[in-house]
Image (cartoon, rainbow, N blue to C red):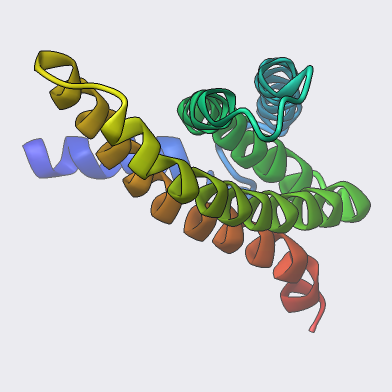
Length: 170
């Protein structure tokens, strides 16, 4: 009985009805795309404000700005994924490709930020001591993990978005 219930819920979420149309209604894709665009707008504006005004050469600013940017990327990533899903499922070829290009550029920017960040890690470790040092080490570890995970994720999203309609058309 429980297995039947699980199967029924799967059909409701991703299955087809008797006519062969997806049970996820076509009206939900525009909402997903709208949510994605909203998350992208809010996330990207937050990141832009972190980088303005630019103070390259100020190592504390560079360290803090890259850390803040990496911490703000989940909102941008969710927005990009939602916008991609909404655009791809509505057949919006140009929008899907734009999301792909922007995602790949984002992956490259994150790699560049990681390089900038790594140049500032020794100064950050030398500038604190005592109990604050543990907090700085945790922040560095988190940022290093993010510097690996986000470029891969944005890269996969970008490639997938750019290939989406190519694979669908032949």
